[in-house]
Amino acid sequence: MNRELAPFNLISTLKKLLWLLPGPVFYALFRLSFLWPKLTEAVYSRTIFPVIAQGLSTVTGILPFSLAELLLYAFILFVGIYLVLMIVQSIRAKRKWWQELLNRFIILLSIASIIYALFVGLWGFNYARRPLSNTLELNASPATVDELYSTCEALADQANSLRKLVPEDENGVFSPVLTRTDIMKRIPDEYNNAAEKSGHSFLGGSYGRVKPVLYSEGMSWSYLCGIYIPFTAEANVNADAPILLFASSAAHEAAHQRGFAREDEANFMSYYVLSYSDDYSMRYSGTMLALIHAMNALYGADSDRYFELRREYADGLGRDLTANSSFWQQYESEVSETVQEVNNTYLKANMQADGVKSYGRMTDLLIALWRSGGITVVK
Image (cartoon, rainbow, N blue to C red; front, top):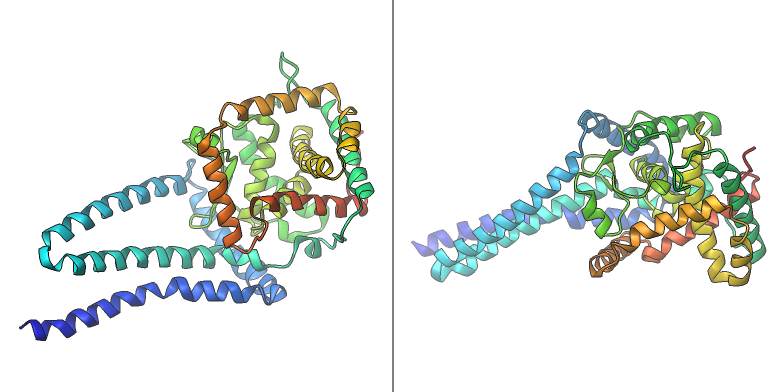
């Protein structure tokens, strides 16, 4: 009897192993896509992905809350319960405990394989698209320190001029009239506005709103301002984050929603899109994001010139930056460091070799924009 059952069990196990294939297959396709960035851009990023993202985000956008966040909690609960049941069933199987454990483990790996395949198919291929500098026709060739300084100077002048035009609270800190809810709702319109004014139609489209994370305090402890979830095409932001960079964070996640997967390019896109905004507060948030990144690069290249330019900041800029830093200092912990390491590993796994350091490469795009005369002072 046991001999008759053995082949059946073997065949059953082999059938289960087939569910492991989606992950490796899509990983292979993912790696191959980097060999043909123009093809990936044309076929996937400009054709297939917009249909997927706009369709998904339109449906999930009906909900005022983040469906992805709730699914994440449900998935964590499922994995916890599944692991407990796996152990219990293995103990009850007695001598055949290893068979039960193997079958359960294969199922778990199959779920992980399918999730990874969905991640790549629904969004991940965008990592292999053409560099944004090519798409926007910007000259992002290596820059001199003088060019970096000039870019920072232009951004500082832009920030100083915008700071005079935005409201502040009783403490003299930036305080826009728009609420966080208003800002999140406004982001899709900002992209469509930028698409019309810049002539880059691929920036536009019908996408769902940016959404707040219910457990935003957890994101603060993790030092995260936002997250994009490809499975629901939702751009999510930390609703507790300081207002200074809130609009730019929302625009950053919306950039991911529109297929700009690389972190440095999403940061630049945030500044680029908000620079076309009709609202000074939105533009100020984007400019401050760009200024912070560019000035950090200048500090590493020439600290003397960094402090020289830093002294040119308007008083309001100083107060805004201090308030922003004070918020994040209260969340400094081993948790935030661990999350940064996890994020670093994630970026490297998606062919961003510099990991978290890739955020600094935004400066190359800012310099390229400066070269084209795209950074101007608001009067």
